[in-house]
Image (cartoon, rainbow, N blue to C red):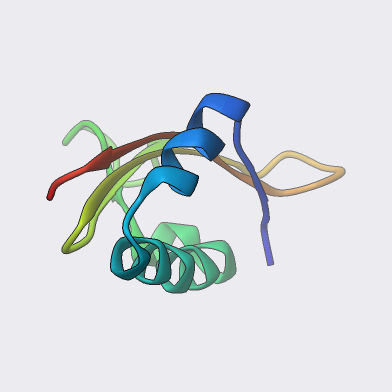
Length: 84
């Protein structure tokens, strides 16, 4: 399991999302933190294991950074774009 981390600005966007979008985002992040390489796509087409990742959902699009270095593996949520 990867630890989720995000800046205050992302938290503010998350908190401002409508209920359906928040629920969808929370479900997706649980799955992403379990297996980020499987449940996200690389931002560039050059490398399957690019640490900069994206995920499009029904209500939001996410920009993430996956960090596999010890001591803690992390998924850093860089940005949330509301698509509504």
